[in-house]
Length: 263
Length: 292
Image (cartoon, rainbow over all chains, first blue to last red; front, side, top):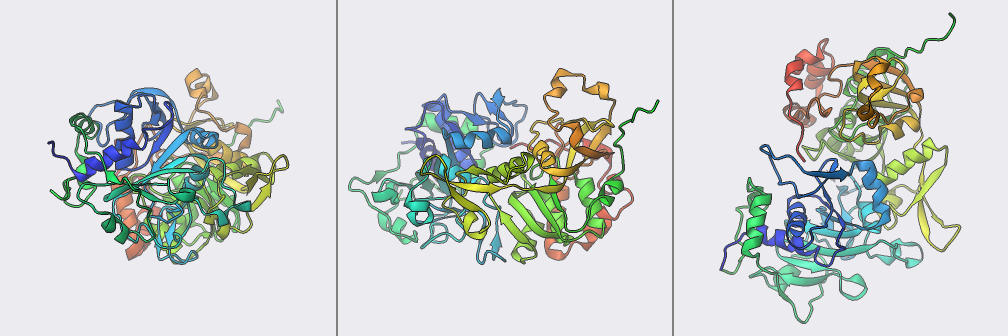
């Protein structure tokens, strides 16, 4: 039995969100777990996945994270910001991002917390979330699964759209609204409940459904055959270590805990 | 013999002299990259006030905010890239010091394109279902004239002035961006009544008779009113491939958001020798390019 960290478990779960993807999906992966997850998917089961070097070029192979130490990204095209914005409405894109809050509708917040005119906490701004969420497939990563992140009611500032019919003309969802997965430090969630309600897809080893529910601000759906998040294989762990040569993943979670919580 | 000679060269002070309080000013670049910072510092020193600023924001927005120059900010984000959160923007926004029009990054682009095309708006899906619409009641949702679909009608972002920084320019206003990403600079300029450039260096027009450079010359010269030569004019933001983001400088700048930034202003903005105050040309020239 191999040994693996919670970060590595999340990275593999992050790769798995691309399991049923288009063979040449354009993936935008923001943050360490999404980026390593997308990179792992490309290196294993989805070689046609299109991703950038993080700045301007399509990279023919995933660019290792952190200091390059002489590594030069292998370019296969240009994906500057104007091209990104021109492509988003076309639709064949999966944005895997790390918002600050999400609610039961899958609405995300990246803007601010508190009174909008003078927010208690100002963050980045809505960035590309409004356009991503109504045009592209959406997945999320949360390093701290708690009721401040997965909130009761609605998020403070709805930056990314979700499945709240009251927010759309005639209650009709836009053509591109398609939320897929939420990977957290406790579990993997999906949107496959009734009317896209959030459901627990798998529990990380040693985590109970009650623990997940207690740390979530809204009711979660428990499927009958609720299973465990798959453990990383030796091959996956080897590839992750190559994609993250400086072990930046050891700092995603405090004290870099094991992925086998119960052990 | 009587033919007009076009020469748009001027100083940074000349450019800022052409700005007026209350104007809507668009700023090119992106976050911590290729911002016309020499012009921003000149505006901080000026008597200008009540500006509406439109930008993919970085320390340009942060400095103008802490200088209390901003009446309204049109933005999708404000970030220093390598430092994700912009401390001065956060302080000023949380203090409610200016109005905001916060929109999706792609909506922002459409707003510039609408202005450039002399249209009132361009339609998109972005914004539907979000608080972008709640907090911007002036942004309307419309039914398609061709189907039952609904679109956000992103209003034109009309600019009085656009300000951008480039790698090379000639006296006509032709300009080359060393890259890699030219971002949306041409759309800022096309959306504006007047546009001004700072450039690392002024070159002869013949320098642009080059097939590779031509691929990175997005701004048409007849959009440009004035161009000022300012070596390292984007510092402390990057101007790839020549110099990177000055992370140490931006960390020190960020720290002044809490403790008050008067010291920063006197040391780095009111100085007679900016390059010397930040460590000299050789130091800036050696700043590594950011890795994302």
